[in-house]
Image 1 (tube, rainbow over the protein chains, first blue to last red):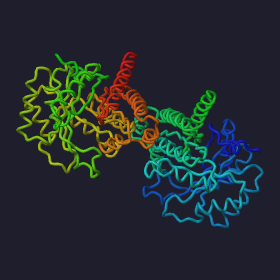
Image 2: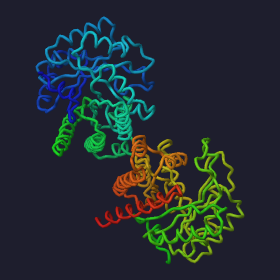
Image 3: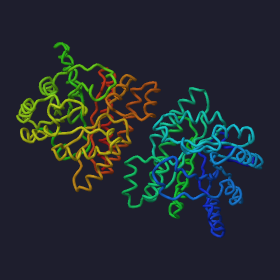
Length: 315
Length: 315
């Protein structure tokens, strides 16, 4: 197999490191785009990661009535960006795809393209951002089509601990998506330890009761370097405990404070997940395009990578 | 001064240790009552505590529609129990008083009795359990009467972090009660780190903004040895994060697990409060009258006492 990420995911390994990014805006002039690609390739080549996540950014206006702190601008198609623009980057790519933008025909065509790839194709299918949004292809139908047209496609699902804090059934969604073919799960950015631990706890209990095995849970972390980034992350649905928001708000250097907090949060969840026998990995991203926050995300990835390495050596 | 607890509270010391108990039921036969008192005196004399809290148990049927897991039975008046039945116990006592059970006359009479005591009288005044309950004397009036008739009375207030989790203004209640004369605050049993840290965070910020000083916050801890105790604690309004409830529910020995969890929670909050400059102490109680849970509460107090001592020596 030419894809160690797929191997690690299939083996349900702990300690997988991913980096996540969104493709540039579709309107980016081609010279500028070339520069962005060159920078990203250089940055990503310097990282010891198992894979790269390329997001599919949707306009989530149907999910939330509050205005989006940053305007929504359509991006380059993530599959195109991952496999063409970043094609020379050898790192395996996990391509997100929002299936509500698809027709059954366009989705099947995409599946066939994935199936034809040399190395194991990896993807996370994303459903509608809210119940009020139009669904081109439903997530359930998408999973069925994937089984039929792209059996080689290694599928992941998204998992939102904040939802678990409210309805306490996110672990059941993970189990249901696993039955439909998902082999790993990626969270949104974690700043709320409690809901994440509660999700992992209920998941561990449910897996044991079913006599099943837990799938790898990839925890996303993202630096937060300004109050504008904080408000955007909150808009995205990321929960910040009040005390932690105060820490960021009052820090002399919020960016540096956020890295320390993310590291603390990670260590607490990592220890807890190991105790419960759930394989955990990380995905680091910057939700902002500010250079300082992107650089901080690279620093954060290195720190979490070290933490996982140090801990793995303890076994 | 003959009362080192009053001194420590007035000096806003960290590391105060209290034990909390409710008086026996009013209907307890006198022989049995004598035995209970003898046992409690023996147990409390063996503990190195700064003080004893004697609760005033109310029927809180107006606060919550769910039936009380244990029946409400009226207890011996806490002032009588503290100063007469437990009179030979030299430990300073903090007597709770639910002022909604008072008339202005009965409350003033009680205040005059407190003022006449040799050692510094200590009390926590408790208001109505809900907005729907009848208020004999309002808490605001009670504080005003206390200033007038018992200026020596060292007053504390109750503080509920779970309320802060919802309305984010519990720190303002602390500040308002401080203006009315409260010099320390006692929480309900802490199983939810996040709301407690958030309360302390907002309190620290508000105190700094006012140029004021933080009052000691006494964190209550209580073992939870059975699902019946858990349901009673939830009925009392104590929040349990979902993962922590799972830990207790699935533990081979929930009582022992609860002690470990309480100790972890305490250490996290203790470190956080020290970082924020807020003096913190502990109050340990058993909400159940089962012997094993009472013994566990004594064990827990010793553990937390050691933690505070070890940490105090590090300064």
